[in-house]
Figure 1 (cartoon, rainbow, N blue to C red):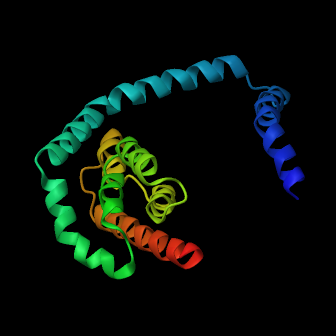
Figure 2 (tube, rainbow, N blue to C red; figure 1 turned 90 degrees about the vertical axis):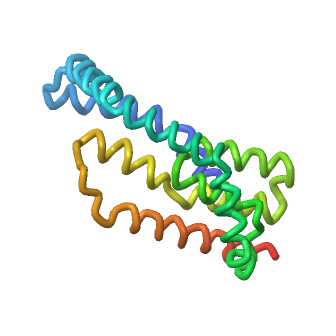
Length: 177
């Protein structure tokens, strides 16, 4: 089974990259002009979201530099230790809701310090893969399409992030400890 999956993963992307244009040509689509039109739209979307992205990155920098992250960790740590979540994972779990790149940087620090086979490294890895960048999505994507009333999106996203972080902790603790 592993050999079959390795073969599929080796050829999947090249086959798709070949199949899609060939299929489009058989349907009479002018592939090059459609591709360049899509690239032009993508560039305009990228330019449109830059202000929202800059604002989000500035807010993340202020949050970390102000000491609010450390204060929040100190406040939450007694609760998370009840489910077996080490306090070292909390900053990465909180940062993940704001920035994927920031969370990846924090996770790489955790892995460099504690190792990939440690409880902290495993929980951080599983949590990073199972949570989302809620505030980034709201700031950039909602802003790009002009949605100003986010209603319950932030609360729902944060609850999803929290449940994923808790599930990552419980699953890692059950499987390895």
